[in-house]
Length: 204
Image 1 (tube, rainbow, N blue to C red):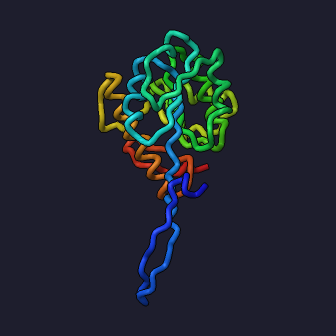
Image 2 (image 1 turned 135 degrees about the vertical axis):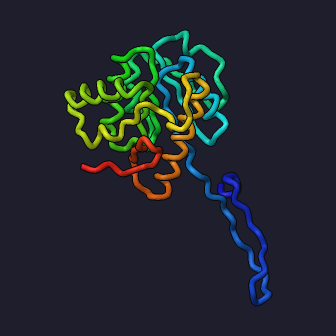
Image 3 (image 1 turned 90 degrees about the vertical axis):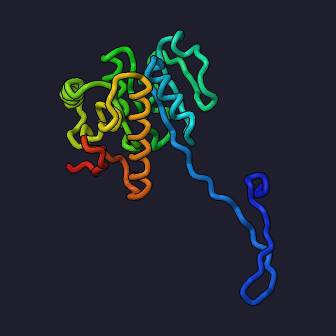
């Protein structure tokens, strides 16, 4: 069983000159689990970028025509009549990106994601004004300020400007990789990326 996992026995010579058999077993790094809600142009562009990384990618959409698409091999595309129900099925420490065609659905998704204390990241496509509107509505739905501080909107590192799907995808991938590295280094999650791109731990 160990050999099937890539383990193998190597003969090494110790300092005293004696040969010893040593079991070498590789330690696999856990892949990044990315859940993208919305299979439109930006969602597809994100899958193209993340498919080049060590990531498990799931795209969820309520429109069949946006799921029946030739996706990269690393992508699992799923139809869901109520996409917010899928949030509870996602693995712990998942990275969520919300970019659907419907603001009301975006709001329900953000509410469900922020309610999960074991999420790694909740990113919402949009503007600062959308962020303020959502924060007000989510607060009314019972989300506290400390949790709201972990909602990232707009998505993408601010140093990469542009509205083209590919530009947004690259900026978002850079942001999530930066976030994941910061979490790994500090062993704390979730973190919020400030406007300057620096991860901070929410206070409150």
